[in-house]
Image 1: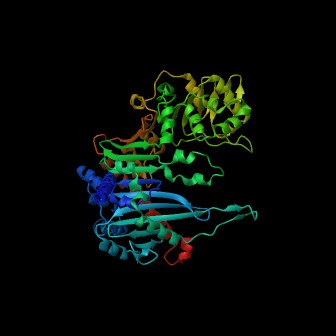
Image 2: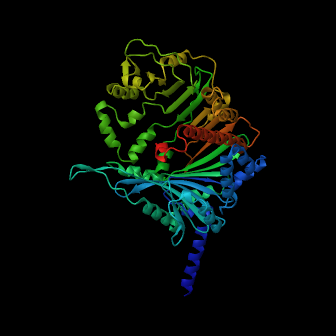
Length: 575
């Protein structure tokens, strides 16, 4: 008896410890399935504090959006009621998640879901009863939740604590019946029943079947933040439809998780992410650790108007490592043997550095199209410039690999040099390659300007400083890009475009090399106003966008009323 009591105490203590470890995940996330593809979480209460500290409250935002006519007054009333009297708990987190999985009868199922908390179930039910036009059925009850179907192929379900909105889509794929030698189109299943089964499963699933049971998910919430993003590789089930199966592909893809926090700081929005890899993926990344980006590749770019830069540096041998782990290296080698090269030599043809620079994007006034003859017209001027550089690794392997490209018609050989063949030219690319590097441009003029190698360095010093020491990095100049596409502020969306140009400055992103069990990365969206909290700045932009979108919708309704006055039959108006 004493031994039994001791074991019982140990079991209770162990269960308590396990529960305490998973307490970091919000309690409502037990309703999110473990195989969700991605989860985005926002904390409206934390966002509200940020806005209030910046001198903005919800009422002022609503007053900025709903300013025009009786339609605005009615819509504002609905939004205000939803905010204050619908029984929704705005102090708790909201979760948006997607799920993709295989269905029966050769079908695929996709869902888009919203999960929130309730503060008063009775108020929520009352709010629903005043908006019956949005639902196709009356409120119905299951053992653990109530529900109603939506008109747009969705279901809304709730209990005394939580609500879940699920939009459901099931795509049926034809398949070939080899016995009867004909294609079969499966009959669609009962989607309402499927939706109800899906919701029933979520409201009654054990903790072990929920995303809250994944340690990386719970750990993410230890850091106080306004938003969270979590993605899992376990939902990548589309590979199950492949005609052949790679031996270790499932092991390589399963249990890799991306956890990120989103914060609104002074002058920028920052997302910090950690990619947790499974043992097999970790061993590959550890054995084939890569260098950092080669900043010399972006020197002497032939333009002052840089729109975007992308750089990456990796160990090319990692491709062979993946093939070995997937146990298909011999299969690939047998395919390449006809060209006198194996997979390891093929990947060693490149050094492992990539640099892409884009500039001068925008809407340009092209020369008028003039007929040369009855069948052709002059080519329009491109709306931007691009240079991509890929340094060569092993020269011998490079030439052997290029022989394959020549044979397939992608490139044309001229001595030790190569240029784009008909296939690449048809795709709109200009390419030149030698035993030093491959250079791809959008046209020959951009390539010629690059060859001049102006001594003027057109890349901003702060961009190079950010890229230094990174495994992968990118930069987007939002100011330059928006000015290129929105040169004036005319039209219904004029105020939005002007506000965007005065609000957004740039985007920086980078990732480090693999370190032990994970890869660290970050993205920053920088604002023009570096002193103001980025959420306050962003709300002003979104307010103008919402006002302009409503104005556009109002304009379309007015045009419809002029074309089809109220006396026209509804079927004519709809078509």
